[in-house]
Image 1 (cartoon, rainbow, N blue to C red):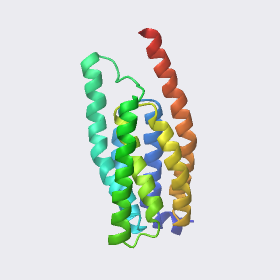
Image 2 (tube, one colour):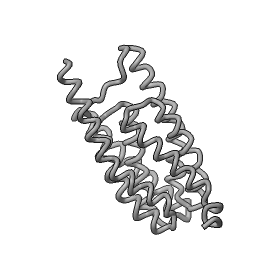
Image 3 (cartoon, rainbow, N blue to C red):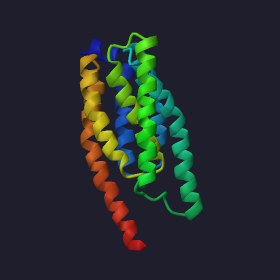
Length: 197
């Protein structure tokens, strides 16, 4: 057991930080972005070692979007004195996000199949493209990002089990369940906002 823990210390630490990130995300606490940044930095190493190259590059994106999310949420509060409100994705935004997600999927798939030895290029590209979209939606507090995460998390569990990343697979099982909890909590916030208006 101690040998396993020492060999997977970075992954386990990243998993624990990610769980804090998820909890804070559900609670709509701006500090979520700090824990997201830290866990992403650790997962760059984990995914590089496991040859999940798209997921590794996704962690770099998470580093950047964590800074963007912090600024976006902070600016939303500064402008109104209130927390950035939860919002629904418009039809136009949905079409744009879907189109961009498909484009990102094909770009990643091409790169992974032509330039890397990725053992799971389709799955890695799929979860990465959707994760990029979901994280941007989180930064904008779009409630539908929780549905995107449910799909990503379910697929990711299988991928991580296949590659022997059991703590990470466990993390994504928890993510799947908590994405439902997150949606319920954010829906309550959205409904409360409508009552105030």
